[in-house]
Image (tube, rainbow, N blue to C red):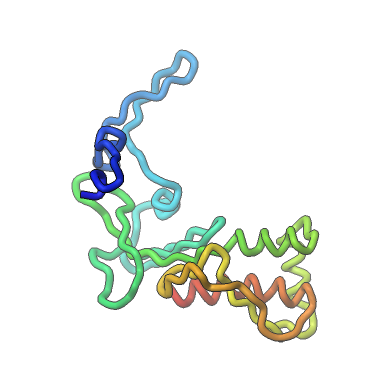
Length: 181
């Protein structure tokens, strides 16, 4: 199969196992701690407020933004991802939407305009005259779900100063999250 095609030996890949397997021990100085749960940051963030609820959507924002909801199957035609967030007795699945350019889009704008505190700049910019005069088409890191376009060019449409454009970048994240919801 694919490993043969790329001349990769199976031994270089880890075993696929449950989230709550016995992974070994972490040794910190003279302290030995059993490692019994393994999960990524996105999956773990979903449990920040306890067990997942089927009537809620969860949003994890960092470099990208990821919105997910408990679901056993991806709705037909949705073009969203199906992910395992925990696997103990049985896998617990979520349907996941991605906004590739969230924090990274704000950081790129801040760097390009010499903004040290993006939160302060955004707070000020929200109250600027002409807010909404421009929009930002956010393709930072490619356009994620449900459109999946790696070649989507980021660009501003409409006129506006730096503050208005900063608001447009922030609004682009909200629009893309809403699209996934």
